[in-house]
Amino acid sequence: MAIVDLVMPKMGESIMEATILKWHKQVGDAIKMDETMLEIATDKVDSEVPSTAAGTITAILFNVNDVVPVGTVIAQISTDAAGASVAAPVAEAAPTPAPQPAPVAPAQHAAAVASSSNADGARFYSPLVLNIAATEHISMAELEQIPGTGNEGRVTKKDILQYVANRSAAPVAAPAPTPAPAVAAAPAASANVTATSIPSGNVEIIEMDRMRKLIADHMVRSKATSPHVTSFTEADVTNIVKWRDANKAKFEKQYGEKITFTPIFIEAIANCIRKFPMINVSVDGNNIIVKKDINIGMATALPSGNLIVPVIRNADTKNLIGLSKDVNGLANAARNNKLKADDTQGGTFTMTNVGTFGSLMGTPIINQPQVAILAVGSIKKRPMVLETPSGDVIAIRHMMYLSLSYDHRVVDGSLGASFLTAVANELEAFDINRSI
Image (cartoon, rainbow, N blue to C red; front, side, top):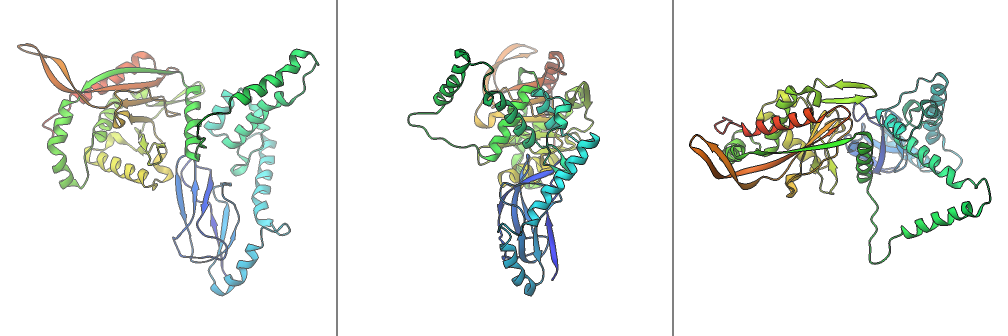
């Protein structure tokens, strides 16, 4: 009987673990090659994991909601039909108290690695964990003592947040050093605060889904990490609107792609990043990391109402056709839950279109570890004063507000405003006679 191990796949360069969302198959079920075995989630995207062999499932080693390191065996498939029918009942008996070696092994391995890592002090910490540690004033010596459940004993976000929660709860649980009445009254006050926080009346309580929790955590961390400043300007995009109206049917017929405003905006942003490279950086302690690649993320709304940011890589090297293909492809993949983990990795700058939902402008939150994010508002017709050789005239123009939020640790008002103005000028200078 041949047994094939199904391992947690590597979902991206920086993805070290994934959470099991749903098993599509159970022990004893037959499965085909490339048939979906389970759904998993990383901190970036949800994905389906196909089977790497055809046969019968003989063991499932992890449960729903378990966080599993990349490369860990999560299930076993028998490729021999006769042997599989015998093996299946054994796998089903695995949850009984006596024989459970398989699920224990990964935990034992992680503990062993954690111990060895603690011994030499050479543990790896992700930027997310280090940011949380800095925000919570956790020293490196204290960080070294936190048990890690990640790959090779790595401390995961879940580990450090659990540690912070326990550390914060400790003083509350500890008895007061003196029995003074004022101290004794403190727990009662806390109880009252908790009691009043319970909603009353005609309400509905909805628990955040996994992605909304991740978004909430990411947004709070961003505001805690970066001092946000937002600058505003407006752009006359009349030429862009007229050019698109005149060419969208021809563009779709010639290239099989719809032409939206998004690739035009991304093209302008990429051109301006080349002129202002210090807007395309990240911060590492006291160091500024200048990114040579221009990878622009585009915030995309999902049918669930959540938000995800797929990334267009090397946007400055692509023409309008290539950008349109990337924009449409990533947007469709996001809407159909087909994004790969790599599709959301490596962004160096983000654009969000708040005008899609009718907003004139917005004050977006920086997508860490980037240092700037640009929001484009809805395009509205407005009467504007135009300067002409024969004098000023009032004309109806298509106008759009732009807003840039930037990290004031490394981007000053001069750079932020100059970059934003350059983007507006780039959009206004769009050639209405441009060929497709």
